[in-house]
Length: 312
Image 1 (cartoon, rainbow, N blue to C red):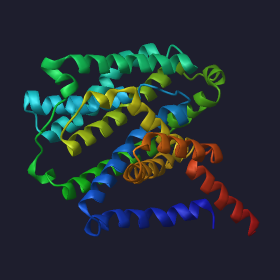
Image 2 (image 1 turned 90 degrees about the vertical axis):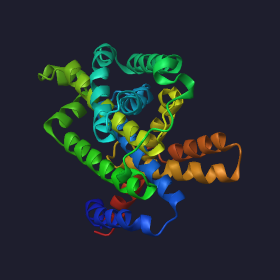
Image 3 (image 1 turned 180 degrees about the vertical axis):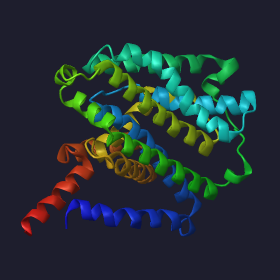
């Protein structure tokens, strides 16, 4: 059986499983799965830049946190309903990322990565020190939510719907002419420029789009946790998101989603058995990436394709 047939069969089964899952698991597991949904959106968005355009951003946490803070501030400071604030988070972050992206795309490789990190840390510093507006290191707690999304059970289905929509939009983008142009930039930016592609314009566009979806993940987590803290913007959060798409596979669209599930599951299991969970989790991820350089999804895809060829 080829990999394409496996995908066609597995997608409906997985969706049906996710729809009925909350009826058969404890509330604690529902919360864990919601975290997987959030991280899947964030990692897929970061992989739009890293895996599909070759722009490895070390500042993804800054824009993830920006979405959460814009949503939280609109609710708590301006009294804007959650439904509007949730959409305002990604839109506001996309607008915010435009001037940052204008500077970042004028550098390449490690210089782009470091410049994106610098801007993200600047945002973190502002949030961390502006006590009168953002709450500083105390964060914003007790964010009110509409009654419809007040329970973990109901928020699960909201998070599932948001994840499906976000992943679908990103998949359509990647398979569009724009997405093919972005992948051409990744493979050979000089050649892409020679055939008429405006390299910086396309890089800026994918930078803004990627940060839009990163902010969507941040806004989703804001509603789930009903608190936001400056640590959402810290570079450590960038490590979490980067580890996820490397774990799942950067050259597979669903790689980051699979990576998110594995990462959250390993994290929760390891924390339960040892106080040295950061070292244990880090070592586990390193071992997986060393023996599976294409990520878990890439490794499985190769095995399935290899078996398919052997059977012919």
